Image (cartoon, rainbow, N blue to C red; front, side):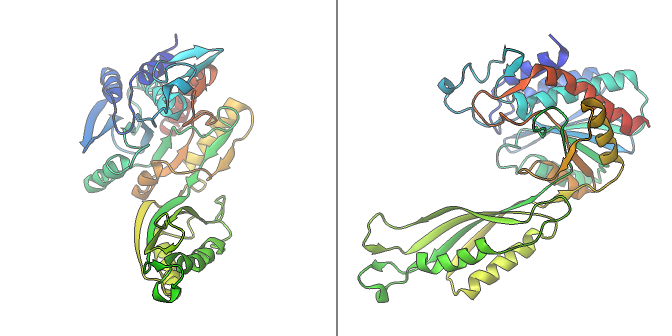
Length: 376
């Protein structure tokens, strides 16, 4: 069994459902200490974070990942136990195989090999892991970034191992992510009998025109490789359960995925103005999930494009699509950020898996990226 397959299997076997790390980071820290890395464990609340470094000074190259996984759902829906790694027909199955214990294991192997071959390398190579990426993302990389900011810790380049490939390993290079902004809107009405609407105030009737305007709005035409900003209502709840009662309030959940034309503060202001103009009595609570980030042309993006082309034989698609990643907390520190990882077809699904061939190719891919950035 290869080193990366062995380590990935060991990580899958630890039931690290967010935010529980279940010993994954200690396993990794022990290996990296043996390889000459300085390891710092940063625990905030119930969340474990690991910061492992080798070398000193700049440039600082960070490999970013997470050891937590989403819940597997009913175990009986899986072909085999989600926390017992199994290989069938050249494919490794288990929760976290693709998202993202395989990438984390590949990071570790690549870093071990790199420092063994180049112990006096220029700059700093670092690994940052959290157990709070799949959860609330409060005490994970967001909190670590605050610590780094207070310390003055610089980061020049960041490679996140999120499963970004679409059909085959290396066919996509993610060069940015949209921002995410969520809202809980409560529209206040006056409860009453449907036969006497003049004695009540229907919050559903009041909310709908405002929501129709917001959902139909053309926010922008996109930005660079970013798609246009989108507002999606994800839940609308009102009523007492009786069809003859006007409810006293209506609750709406919605989310915006937005490109660099916007920031959270401007969007909040724009949406508040629409609600005010429609005369709503309301409460609005926001959750800022992270601002958009974008890595323009530069050394990191150019080196990544060249390395992926070497591995696949063709230039990768360069994209900013998808959800969010913890790179959104590293980019504001001034870092250029990209994402490269395995195929994402099975992530968060029953029978999550990764091709053994792809998994065993990952350490060499990451090592080549490290070498291009720190040795040339």
